[in-house]
Length: 482
Image (cartoon, rainbow, N blue to C red; front, side):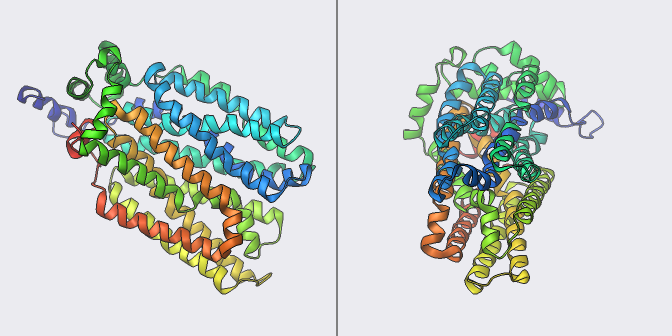
């Protein structure tokens, strides 16, 4: 950017009287619509939490089969995560979201009609591909459509909707739990089919990402979208200039879409690019290795071992966890653009560490104690504290931070790699949870998760700079990826 362009930045940030301009509501509605697909991500992952009880009763499947069925969706999502970057760079962000909804239509429908375990696993595979796509494309679109003033809020939307989906799956588990076993679990899956067609149709009404349009050489279309999604006309022009500067410097041939191969070669030669990719992968590793999906998928089993004996109460407590999780993300959304990413991440990982140590200590001190209401209550409080502290920071902000620090030329594929890491670790954690606590006890399992949470605190404190208020293009300077 030359000196003649610098006044535009000042004009973009204030009105003539010096007051900040009012925030544009249109990018909020676009980000909400794109992120609503994430409701289906949360629903499809977590519905197995209650459905597994009735599948085991109806089909007579073993604990090992339940473990595989519950956790396999995270491994299957690798397919979608690795394809999403390629798809979004070629078809665009918007059509990729439509494709995601198609997977969320076919997967649950297959499961609800399944006659046996193989069909259930096939439906879980299709749903998993949709999960991988959604985890990549929703935060990428939200980050690229948002002005800097509200990017933290808008890029957090996919996570709040994921947790809304988790909460709705728990409600579905509870609502259908009174039906006969052969019918209840089928309706739990079928309920996830309904929203997909409406969401796909709605997505077609929103604009394409301006950064993707610019990357494809469609500058006038990008200019028009930026005009609709910026707080002021001057800010729209400034954002376009910054995008073009990044494209000219770092994506040779971007107008023809030919820059991706050379961009990936930079990872081998540029320390800044390696640092960004390592940061993304580490954040996604820590987010899942601390055991959050074990609590999401096996919460009733954990609490049953802590002394809660009623199935209805177990499923009701699951709803409580979902409400607490979703409410905590609202706090993160409200604070991300005010207090910054680092403070929330540090509070989050510190709180996770403490709550996991308390939960592990409950099982260590009271192993074998039955029907003790006080022990069960402490376990419930520790689980609620864990999901709340996770959701106020590491849950949503791992995606926010990853999306905003990736350079434009790597954003689609880099987000795919980060999501692949996230899903691999989640799959390993959820597919080994029953076996793990059988080998090292429930106390040992939560102590292990607590150690990972403590390591994530150290990583964030030592390695992550603050990104609040910076334009996406500024990240190139912050991480020296040019």
